[in-house]
Length: 541
Image (tube, rainbow, N blue to C red; front, top):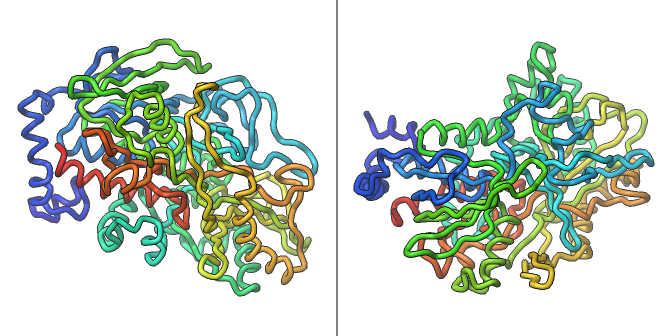
């Protein structure tokens, strides 16, 4: 087998010699300790089980870690707070439609909390049964953070916009990371692993379901803003068939916010599928980690098993040689903040909980003229945006508004250069972790977004919609889809995600990134995880 052939078998871009050198020590260790031939503990993980590597969370960072560890000969067990999402409901579908949320839609809520709470003067939220649904709208003081709950994490509920940030912006985000390595090796590896592709622009220009985006392009270009197409992880051939009516509709039927039943390449179909195929990775859904404590050279991990109503049905303690925190920016930061403050992991440094940001998220809608219809059928997968980052500090995704009716409205999710950063702290009185974000901190994001939309409105003679986020409220400044930070790289950890103070504890998710990526963040989270796990395997195992 050639070196290049070896690249395609596991680590793209890594030669066979480098792969063997980097993983030989762990393979030898595994053989000596019996792990090379042993299967990982079955799911659900039993009390008292021991695993060489335990991964908390099944999102982007955790999935990368699990796959690469397994390929290097390490047995891995992944613990996921949410459900497996592999069983259809009574309607024959695994996921609920965005337009008709039901019990599957929200994490342990009795009423939906939709990002667009109102439409044409009517409130949209409705009562639902309490259930371990797919979307968590987690409330903190000043902000609601939307997160995916289930095997696959945020990949289950995001729009699939797979953006590699422009190279000049990267150093401002992660100055301790080698830019050449990221753009020559780890971003390409991440894009390949995620199945990132580009929409056929000729087809895009011809189909009704992207009329809304073409209207967005026309308005952007008439105000002299750059309009850019963005890569995605959707299967475009499947969407072509959706449009043709030869397969069940998914994105063309508005499926997104509460999961996509067919065309989107979530982590379930990419990294996690590969990881499970190794035979070395097991996943326990509905398992929530509450403690990670040193124990005789290993770590004792306390886990609560949940039922679909959120009740704790069992509490288990398992042990692991190494633990990877991959519960997302919020989950990882909350757990580490609690463990430090309660003296379970007192050796963690003072950077734990700091550097959290919302990726500058703010939403708005514009009311267009009657001669600018955006289409009753809108594909839920966004494909493009308006780039005013250098001049105004904002990138605006031209987002769908898949109501099923003509709205004469353009809708946008902006990512902005918001400088504000919050901190997680332990509230011993309330026995919870608090976040110091203030709603007023969104004002820089609003101002940056206005650098685009004030100009477009003036040019087009249009106005902002005031009916989407409440009564007479223009800006969706109460939320984020892109939580980042809380255990920042090279501050709370070393330059590869090793937590200071404890050998064998790692952060490998969005908590490493200090509050902003200038674009949709999941490709950067994935690429950084690829970089870090390669070094960790070579040096630590």
